[in-house]
Length: 264
Image (cartoon, rainbow, N blue to C red; front, side):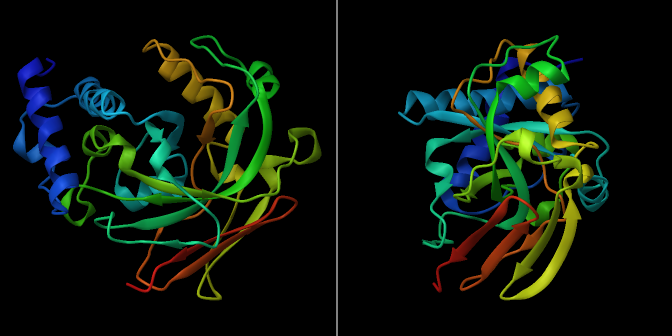
């Protein structure tokens, strides 16, 4: 049984208050009985509607929990998606202030930029490939408004799939020039390796993640738009970040991307 509209609205307000106060909240699943995945997406969309009404813009989507490593790390068993807003973007090498984050972590991804819309359900691999303009190395800053990252699948979905921000590299690559499944990544923090992985960790291929996203959001009436950025999921486990950290992901054949966090 799905939650009432009032319960969903109350849950959305709890998360928005965490954003505003900078104080994480207890898991929604502990505060509201019986929340379902459907409720969680409704709670997410209620927040997005408020953000867009306030003048913010959706510039893409992210898929989370796509790798076995991430699912094991957070104790979930299926992917989820969230919305990317225009103010999530940080420029490479420029200092990222931590003040806007509660419990930030970071992970390396291969970002898609679309050249034409994708509307599901019914999108297949060939259509997804045809819609991609190019890929970029990327670092996603994930964050949780839920205290101590004590999240279930429902909690993270409601919390916009634990989105926070992202940094894109500046070396575009066409899909025909790379096999994303075999693309390896070395992930370092302050010049020390903290993770390695490959594109195949993302549901077997990041393209599979893009197909899943197009069909999942399409069933909800949403189209992936031309020019939008799609973050398909991490190729390694996420790592925490602190003031002064410098993180770099180097992808074979795609180049590298660096995120630098402010000292204060």
